Length: 92
Image 1 (cartoon, one colour):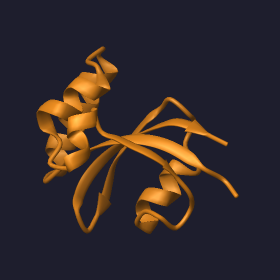
Image 2 (image 1 turned 60 degrees about the vertical axis):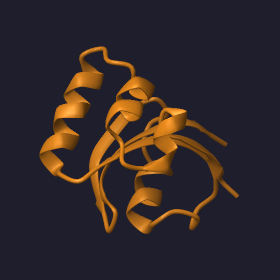
Image 3 (image 1 turned 45 degrees about the horizontal axis):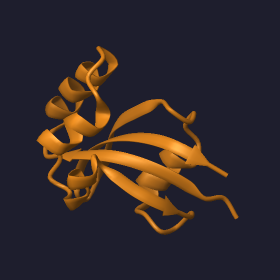
């Protein structure tokens, strides 16, 4: 079974999500941006969600985490929680 490690940033608007993605693509550190902006408790760990398998996260999240290129920043991904930026840090 596939396993992935990922980080994310959760915000309440698509506009904010896009702004943060631009900042990260411009060189801002993902973990620093997560700590300063994410409303998820994982923000304290720079957005790190640890390792998980398919079905452990909401479907919209899984779809991106198990298909995106490792290291790419994906999003905005809309879920019932808000808008996410996702970065797959590893997958096996």
